[in-house]
Image 1 (cartoon, helix red, strand yellow):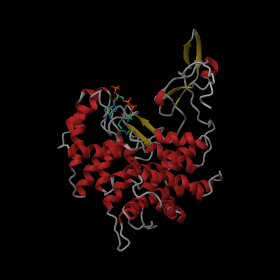
Image 2 (image 1 turned 120 degrees about the vertical axis):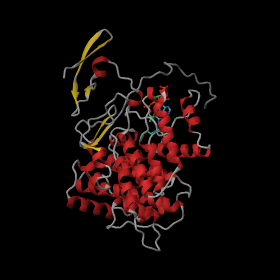
Image 3 (image 1 turned 45 degrees about the vertical axis):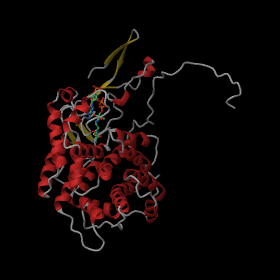
Image 4 (image 1 turned 30 degrees about the vertical axis):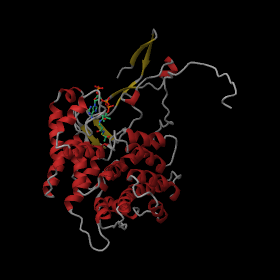
Length: 426
Ligand code: ACO
């Protein structure tokens, strides 16, 4: 590919270009400031490639999502969460033996340090589980050695993170409802263990319904990675300072919490519930979303990258229909969601802005059917996203181009002025 030409301030400059494996062209501006004196202005980073990555490919125009080259449609619902996590982390699907060993290692490393359980016990009873998760993961760097670059050492920390995130999540729920903690078992899959830790009673055997286990596996896989989104970029930003894996991941969890990102799934359900209580008047909410004088947005609609459809939402909509039918559930919120989608997809406001349902639009209805309380929705997203965050952390550590991430700014504040002390501020 030819170099790009830039004419700036009367001079012409050549900028190197390169092309990704899926033919995405890029202009390398690493030397832009050195040669031209100018920097780029790209608020929200919509045009900025912060790294080269071989983990996930997205084509937002065509609604394509692939993990390590595999289309999401060939993975979701077709393998267990831990097998997909292995693919995400190590770049290849596990053999049967690798899958068994890895699944066992995840369960063996899913027990929380007993001092950490004390720590969890002392959160206020109304603490949001995302806050608990972020700080519990951050506290793991106090409990486990983390500075070694030795592969075995890094691997055990990965197993702890993927293994323990679901335990912390389930324990925070059990604590919020005053139920005793249930520990994971090696004869259960990842998702079955999570459901058991959430819903079993210590007084009797709990058989995890297969429909729930499979649905949860699928949901978690659909959330596993989404290249340089807000939380993953946060993990990378923190990692670039050589912060430890627990500190980096905990920062990502906090970034995910916001309602424009992972927190949207909770916001969608709140919105659908509100519409339901408002006699199902969904048109009122469509009109509010279109009203420039209102700050209201249709939660679960729109995406920075997908400008056609979100393939995860398409898959999820089918799964929701299937699982609810199999579980014999009729959820009026699903009817409202479908009505909203139908109206919005025909409305010029949404068509012009290319606003389609994103993954969060239907995920909440499925979580609800599984009995997951609303404030746990974003935590479920974090469990699914954990292997993706770690894969980026690992990739970044091995990247020969790794530099501390440090964007610049265009200063627009006051120019030089002087302070004349008169003693009043002393
Ligand atoms: N409802 C109504 N209008 C919307 C919505 C929405 N959900 N999303 C975007 N718009 C409008 C904006 O008002 C803007 O209109 P304008 O051009 O007339 O000013 C236009 O569409 C572009 O919106 P931006 O905010 O510039 O788009 P951006 O790419 O920055 O934001 C985002 C993407 C944050 C996802 C946005 O669409 C949104 O807020 N959606 C609702 C929250 C949500 O569902 N988040 C989950 C995202 S997926 C995930 O994180 C897993």
